[in-house]
Image (cartoon, rainbow, N blue to C red; front, side):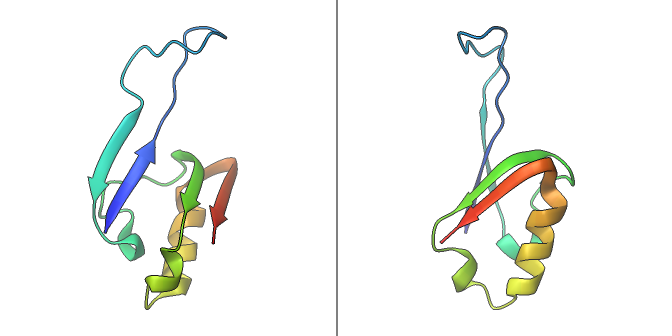
Length: 77
């Protein structure tokens, strides 16, 4: 399963990026920390039909919650 992590940095309101804003990590959605996703490091998580494929949905949701920054959002279908 491929995890796609977006991080945005902008030097102005025009949205010019000072550094790359996309990072790909390979790992299992149940083990986000082991895949390199730190706690309190993600602004938004979008998961399209991935959570339902996991045998341990409780672990997925707990990991997503831990990875989100305060005020972060999690969207899944």
